[in-house]
Length: 93
Image 1 (tube, rainbow, N blue to C red):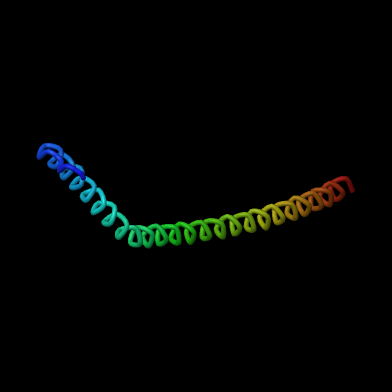
Image 2 (image 1 turned 45 degrees about the vertical axis):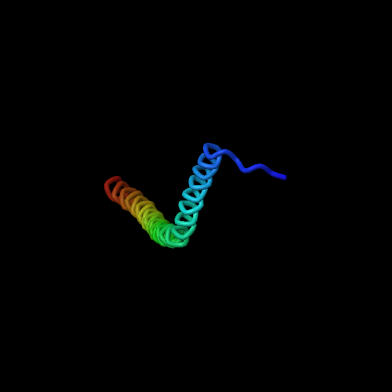
């Protein structure tokens, strides 16, 4: 037959059990907090994703404007060259 544990060992075992109970309670609280944290993280991610898409669109718009400006600059250079050529031909006449 099993002899009962001495009082000191029973107290130590009880203390260990209480520590485990505290850890379990802490883990349960953490588990309950996870869905809220996940919701917050999802909201932050969505906000960042929206900002990223906005920045990408802004970059595309800037690139489009740069391309149009460069095309206009090239066209104006060609016009200037033709005007200078006509001017030279008139002066040489």
